[in-house]
Amino acid sequence: MLVDLLKQAPVSLHIRRRWPQLAVGYQKISVNLSEQVLDTLREMAASESVTVTEMLRRAIGTHKFVEDAQRAGKAIYVRDLNTNQSERVIFR
Image (cartoon, rainbow, N blue to C red; front, side):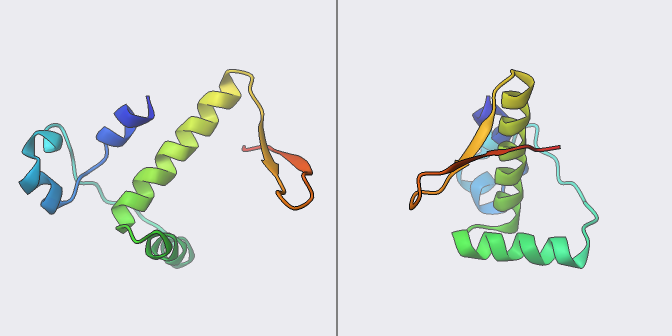
């Protein structure tokens, strides 16, 4: 499911040239982001050594994963590896 979602996101020109079959059905979009959100997105992309497009694709995939899990009645927890304490994360 996540793979299918990621396949729906735009691909870079490099990928389209190398694997043209991946570009079928892709669309370029424009989004309006605040400077703060765009700076955060750029920082995240740089820290992972990926493009802003790839980071946005990952963020959408992660959000979809979380949303699907919550709709299925599942809970998401964050565990501190040092103390072994867990805390439930609630996304709204």
